[in-house]
Amino acid sequence: MKLNFLVLCTILCTVLTFAQNRKLPIDTTITTQHSVTINGANISYTATTGTQPVWDEMGEPVASLHYTYYTRNNVRDRAARPLLISFNGGPGSGSVWMHLAYTGPRVLKIDDEGYPVQPYGVKQNPFSVLDVTDIVYVNPANTGYSRTIPETGDDVDRDKFFGINADVTYLAEWLNTFVTRNNRWRSPKYIIGESYGGTRVMGLSLALQNQQWMYLNGVIMVSPADYKVIRVGGPVSSALNLPYYTAAAWHHKALPSELQNKDLLEVLPEAENYTVNTLIPAIAKGGFISDSERNAVAKKMAFYSGLNEKDILDHNLDVPTQFFWKNLLKENGGYNVGRLDSRYLGIDRQLFGEGPDYSAELTSWLHSFTPAINYYLQEELKFKTDIKYNMFGPVHPWNNEDDNTRDNLRQAMAQNPYLNVLVQSGYYDGATTYFNAKYTMWQVDPSGRMKDRFEFKGYRSGHMMYLRREDLKKANDDLRNFIVRTAANGKSAKY
Image (cartoon, rainbow, N blue to C red; front, side, top):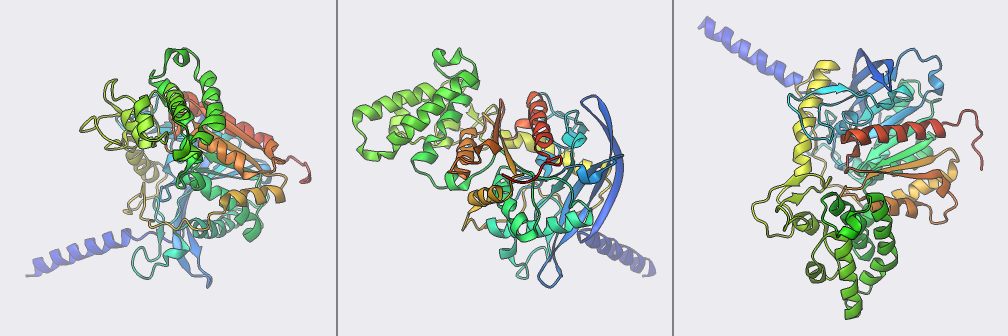
């Protein structure tokens, strides 16, 4: 009986310890030392990973956000050194993607085109921008290791976290605490957001200025999702897909030889020009377009997309992206093409259909990212926890009402002459297409008086263009040059 009692106590203690370990520490840091070779130079740096609270109006913690902060060692003047604040998107996605594949000092073990390689893990990033800027990767509530307090239940005020404006408001407040704790108020500051993160950083640009009195030098949008186009539909939203169709079809050699024999960057301006000057007006006419014009447009769309002319007519010139992914290669191998990166191929149950069974590219990426981030944070950065790392967290339903983020960015730029914008997109991204990103950039400032502060860079890859090694180097170089160029270096903030 005594033995059974001891066994029972041991089991209970084990269960209690496990339960305690599943609770995220609200406010903690772990610091480790590392080095990386970037562009041939050895860089020693400090990695700080931990959690920092989100405070409510009464100063009580209502969430704890996990972050990873990299600072270069042996910097004489930290005030002059930029700080890059990095978000991914979703909404509901952890910061893993750009952290372990783009700007950070470690990247995935993948092949040169971005496909998984076993054994999984990480390696040095020889192109990281850590040589010119310190970086912090932030996981919003319920993504990565970040959690609301309590984690679930009726006591969680979802309206404080899970919507465009709520997300911007609490993250701006959290960044104020982070910048204060780490004595970075004097540093030039940049915010970078991928996908939905593009919407997030547009909103944050003004919220940081007007709510936290924190002024930025740069906003970087990577494959930005602009929901004023993507979820609205209509002639503009539909037509903007055509240049992406051209790019993806060119990659798969599905265009007519007249186009296929040209370089991609020779072909895309043709498709862009046709989209803006012919296709948008044609689709806008709806059912009142003449038969002759409808047929002429369908023929030209087929020319630029690799799709069947009859299929385009059957869709009344409004061809959904899902149909394109499913049918581009229907007669050429029968594969579907990836949504986020159309270089990737998938196999469906049947050839017929309006859309693919699954996203070929995302399943490929999850092969690499999930084991890598879990290994890296726990074993190299020493953040030990039994909490699950949410690659995609429970944040839905997401409140998309009152999306004024485009104009938020315009106002922030108008108020702050230091503020510049860099947009980076992959030509083969079918979710947040490169031409949609260009369109967003054009629409931010209708007056055109600030267009010299916008810059667009395109890459021969997809949504996460940095997975392709050639573009990993190019994109980091573009980002590095942008940061160096836009740091004020004593120049007055005036027009």
